[in-house]
Length: 113
Length: 112
Image 1 (cartoon, chains in turn cyan, brown):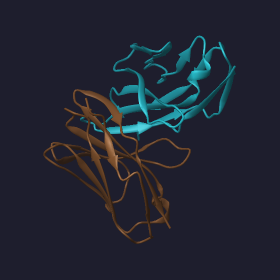
Image 2 (cartoon, each protein chain N blue to C red; image 1 turned 90 degrees about the vertical axis):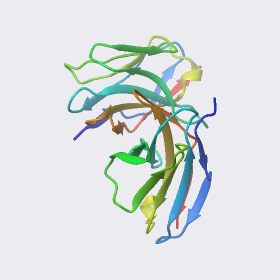
Image 3 (cartoon, each protein chain N blue to C red; image 1 turned 30 degrees about the vertical axis):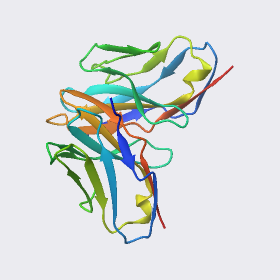
């Protein structure tokens, strides 16, 4: 069945370090892919998305490229800030009518000054 | 623009009881999805409602049921509560053809 697998955390980085959070997926058809973020004490919010192969989603300095050949959607940022500390979730939407959603288990990022 | 709201914020129930959770979608959104998020885990998709009908369902038993009303608000009902039903229940709205989920703050359900 459809699923999302993302790297386990927590990930601890120093400010200005390079970030990669790995995400791979299993899905039939052509899913849309998302990264959601949950900051401390806040609700889930969309960070970026990609709807077809080779699309690159980007927002707030974060990027992720939809790689169909490797079924991956890794999240990257060139220089993290303390304010990026949060839990990041990879997700996909699939199904005949794009009516089923799958989230990864989340990766907690801690950025130290 | 009004965001997604959920009620109540917290709820404590006893095993075997029934519970109803409520959600108001973001203004203009006609599709509502419900998720269960256990502590330290990602959200698990329960089901989606579109035009007052269930449009998709995850791997949850029939004792999880829902409704969507003409104003697009929605309810999640859980019968015969079990201890494992203790979780944060999230509601999200969207407007096809965009499938971006806009999440509410959630209802924390504790089953004792």
